[in-house]
Length: 351
Image 1 (cartoon, rainbow, N blue to C red):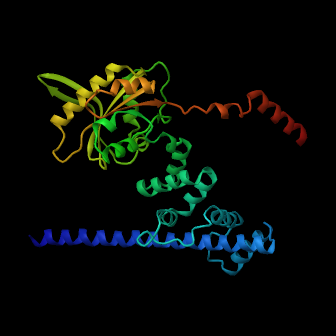
Image 2 (image 1 turned 120 degrees about the horizontal axis):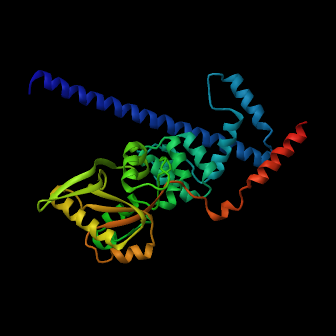
Image 3 (image 1 turned 135 degrees about the horizontal axis):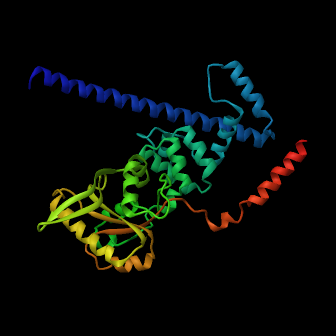
């Protein structure tokens, strides 16, 4: 090994060690901050319970802390209220330990998620197990607060693993469950500006144009390989709409985009593509290629019948260009007329 090569290798190793130390320092600092906020929330909640203190003590406490410890940030009235809420949401968690020594998964997640993420989750997600699911995804995928907010808004939890598929028959455990959880139904493409009528090729073009947002919606682990990926089989040319490689599943994923409703013949064509990719592209250490058919609509039972005797692992999901509101929520929203009446009433009161 030359001196220059030796030095470059040494530099890489040192930089990696520095980054590891920085990451550990950030995690440790975050863990201590979360622990402190939980402790303070516990103190205040217990005092309120025993001494009958109400919310009036919070403004005074906030003012005194800022006056006596001006260098300390994070003690606004609002944030102190959040500390109390944080303790009340997780009263059984007696300690928040760093990830390396945490005894329970919940403790690891609580200590490893930034404070702003906790505040968002408590505000938006009332079901604690669902909240912990979002914490786990945040820790695994490195979601920042804006990404977490977008995932909550698009109801990522309910969409996970719900697609029609034949993974149980075509893949061994645990790969079948890992694949099922990596895919979702429906996929929300609300970052596109397509209007009807549009062609499949236009949808494909727009998705690639917004590739970064498309990859976020697909989920962690997807690496883009190519669009209209060319395969030559028996002197004939074939083109896959979109080809990806999943870094965690260790397999290729073939995506076909379809306008309209799912049709049984789509499964046969996808089976062909997966076989071709397995033969022509798959490495001996790779897992089986996965097929994902994205349609505007589908009957799930109908799709599962179409996949039943297909030999390659294939899933069928819908895609939406805009996220429709649940029916029970639609009825609770005010009409245009009601909004106009309310605005008129407010204007009259202010005159």
